[in-house]
Length: 247
Ligand SMILES: Nc1ncnc2c1ncn2[C@@H]1O[C@H](COP(=O)(O)OP(=O)(O)O)[C@@H](O)[C@H]1O
Ligand SMILES: [Mg+2]
Image (cartoon, rainbow, N blue to C red; front, side):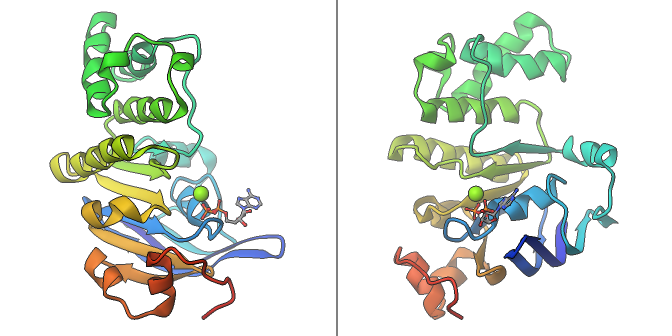
């Protein structure tokens, strides 16, 4: 369980998070949504110690991790998998080699076993048929899917995916959505997805956290989000721009 208590973060005069209170429960698929630039990435970076808050606390599984040192954060991070917007692959390795590498390095599999297991992970993201291509032979959306497959080999308790479907076409997005669903429902992982894409959310999310103007504007299941009579929420659902100073 991950808890934020009155978390605030500014960059100079840019007050990005203004006192965030929220709890992310184990085994749920939580979507963090909001328009571009609202602080979604900043928020999730606090969960893994890539950013430190100006004030407020972060509590993970009952431990206050707010003031953890870098080495203790590394320990925390080993339970997580993170796929950021611009995750990159090794250019000089095939897609399969990219996915097999952590299986050999961190899971101690033999070369042959790692190659076999890598195919299972590539299948999950629909990339098994291109396993022996080089990263430069496939498009950016496909590279992103392989980056996700590679991250999943570490079998984390919690996966954080920052904008996993941005730039993907409908079919590829559908594959990623299925994968998120599989992670949460079958493998019972905690999954946190950052997104500004509403297309997939309603089918997949257990819970939606809507960030707006530095605060949590709505926190609840998809039904609560859809039926909300908050005009800001309605505007977001309709895809209309929401003014930053509106309350
Ligand atoms: N390391 C940083 N230094 C300064 N400003 C930052 C940094 N990271 C993010 N910001 C600013 O914080 C705001 C929120 O950014 P971000 O969390 O990336 O938005 P998004 O919701 O699109 O993920 C933006 O105004 C961005 O410019
Ligand atoms: Mg972002």
